[in-house]
Image 1 (tube, one colour):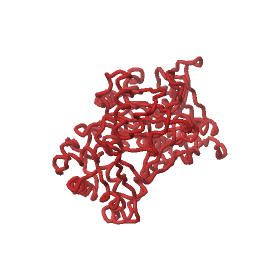
Image 2 (cartoon, helix red, strand yellow):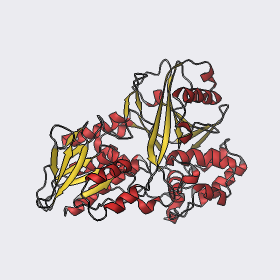
Image 3 (cartoon, one colour):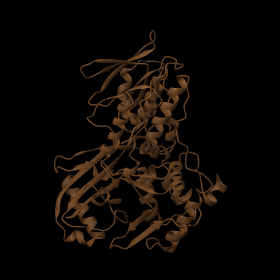
Image 4 (cartoon, one colour):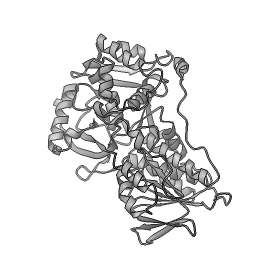
Length: 482
């Protein structure tokens, strides 16, 4: 992988900020570390696990011997900051892009949404009108709903998306076959717990603003391999990545304007001029009592207590034969939301003798108490309703991954407690998809938070840098509504 020459650390006028400790090696921490390393800061990243990527990671499953992702992660064309990070670390060629979404009904009937030469927001209208999955009444209702977001995204309010669907006279078919597969999967939450603001943001970006914004990208390599390149990128620029190293407490030394980090490794303590706390909201809450107790900490603690989790369940199935020629699809009227044909999506896997499928159930609270055997039986039975070959196939092995803390619940009015990148402490900055990024719990939201934290640090150092990437511009007729 090509890398640019290592930059030397600048000496002025950085107000004494030359070294930066990043606590947390998830996507947010990696984004902040890579951006700051590029700006010449001496970066040290601490990650308690043996790998980076946080919830976007992969590992060898002990029951199958296969390397699996903890859950299928995708991106779309409007993820400008995530795409920038991939370009920065040299893995943009590891993303496979798709211009169509396939909806499959029980029995195997397919409907495809794809872009055409028509200007936005009409670029998907021709395929939408042809789609068998939606009745005429459904199409009229969906169109009415989409038009509500053409002019812009509503301000956050106490209204949830289920109420919005009723208010905008959505049919049962429209809800179950369009809004659920697109929104509940994208936001990992049930409609009665989704903020209308973020529902509108997803719909406007994916289906209305431009044809480019709605393209779907899927990694072609395991997530830990993808984000592992960020480690090499940091190291190539003079930084350090300390795996299996947790930060147990932090102390601020006013007399020498430095942070002291107590770690669990042999070195014990570590000093740096500034810190970026790139932790999940629950990990941040646990760390607060072991940080300086200054004004603003109680408010941050109270806000952190207001976040809730929403789970995702992924089901990994290996069959002895090819089950379908589709690379991915939304399964309608099913307990399963999406199917990803991983043996086709990841070229390094041998698909000559079978199929490896990953199935995703979003907001899967109903599955958390079911056994692995029960979930696998359900999944195979559901697949058989869509792909008849499953009924003759042999299931060679299977795995179930329950991510109980997969995302935070993007409920109405959550923005009121999402903190910005500043913090109550000097020279300390916050990152994480739960911070005030303007995006929900996604890899894009995580990268945005990392870039914003890095920007805030450079501003405090007296050398402000523009690292955050703006949204894609509207195209076609949508330019009239910007």
